[in-house]
Length: 430
Image (tube, rainbow, N blue to C red):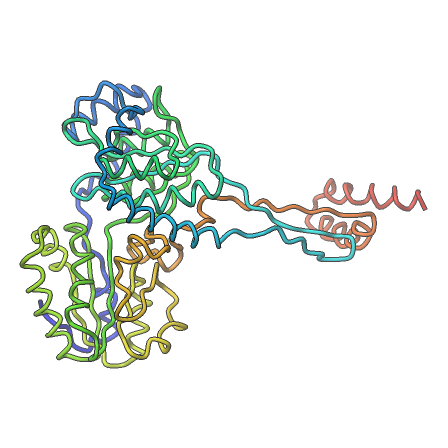
């Protein structure tokens, strides 16, 4: 693990590159799966599930009996932990509701906006090496709060056609409407197109590998919305000379264990700190169950010495990390200047794991520098805002002339006439 010392700005673009994606024919594979699902429906879904997940399914939908059996296998201790997380996530997201506020723009002209739920949403939940039941809480709770009528969940089964019990428990807890044993591109295709068993939805949420991410982006071409183009997980930690090397190393590895293509970057103003952190990474890595996967991610990662505070902040904004940990004494000097990050974790006792599970914020966040223009999932993601306006007689009188002039200048006579007729009617009343 080399330390890059005081890199010049013209090298930052290279330093902040994400791991290269594999499968140059990704688009072709995704298109073929969508076409097959469009043509053959459930039959195609079962064939792909047998091919990729080694599960021979009679039914794609998880039955109520299967759900109850799974729920019974979840320990009471885990249920209590999930309940705590659910409560905090609910409190945080409920605070994001926008109440109706009528604004008088001109005398007699009232405008306002109101939130309305997206009626049908789809949740994709990875279920392979790490069954992410926590993501169900992050997506299902705001969906339910927003008032979404249908919440469809797809997650891949194991070779026996079973779904992880914690996934089933979390899905039932948050009020998921239907659960399907589907993973990968075929799951996204099913929720996009609809089949005999799987209803189509209006918007798809959830993380996944490059195939799932690519399939979500392909779904956009079919008229379906997505939360964001989220790919492999990533983390940047900024640590000063007083940061605990053990804490920093544990944070770096907590993201590195997500997958071979994850990436972590550690920035410090102290070469001694970076060296101590690297020693801790090696020690903690050696005893991790997912050691091989975490090591691959560490190989994709960087340890960077940047002495200047201004340069550190600019480097953060250039990278636009999904997760950013500020393990520094002078955190206030950073906060107002950070403009590109999915979620920020402040201080030595705020591990990224808190946001992943139970602090209340959402862990579905933009990756691959999309934090420059995307927000993480929040209540807005599950709603639309409809604008309303109401003009009185005085209102149309006060802005009517301006509308007529602007419409005529654009050559839209019918637009002008819609106002002129009303103004003339009011003159005749007088």
